[in-house]
Image 1 (cartoon, rainbow, N blue to C red):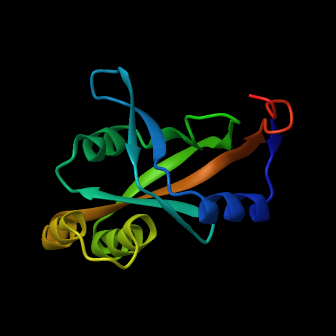
Image 2: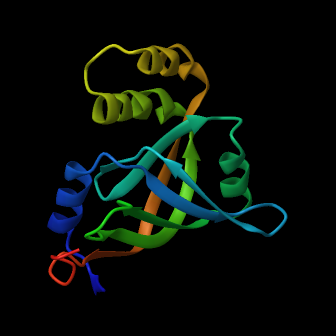
Length: 144
């Protein structure tokens, strides 16, 4: 695994519509992994969730997180790293709209309407990566 340049990261982010997996520590000290939609803006990763979601409490208690963006099917390729997360209340609705456009497109759907109708309680999670790596096993898995 090699340290990644920003062009590879940007390409990966723009090509994928899979969620990011975020690992954090609960208030009881146990690790937990959860998946959220994400986007990358100016080298930072952004997610949106409801302000009363448990991950918000976990991040407030311990902002150190790990993350991975990778498909479940071969050939395996993706991006992973660790960094610090913080909650930004004022960006929640804007980030949510960006995520809806990325993952659902411009079409109107029951899910997009539900999310937009409940967006007043959205907050943004901003992840500032401290280490970021990509991996691509396509060559060695070409016959899988």
